[in-house]
Amino acid sequence: MANFGIGQALRRTEDVRFLTGTGQFVEDRNIQGQAWVGFVRSPVPHARIATVADALKHLGIHHIDMPLTPERVWRAIRDTGAAEA
Image (cartoon, rainbow, N blue to C red):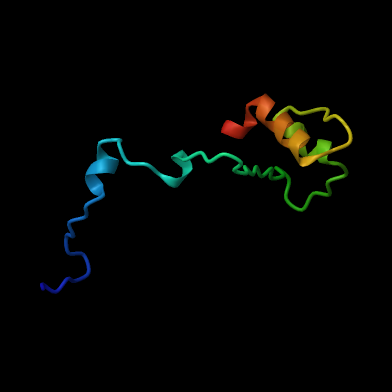
């Protein structure tokens, strides 16, 4: 068995799959019932957020149906196309 050092080339078996586009990443997998998460960050540091709707205004969301649920917030973000950004 050969000794390996820092910076030495190392043959890996997964390289061909990923270099040819046939490899599958964790994000490429969709499982029934999986959950998705979306994060919205404020463009203003240390800002006081009065309402969730105020926090989403910079994404073009001006109204979310009440009662406010995580599903409705995510749907509003997804519908604006901000989720792909």
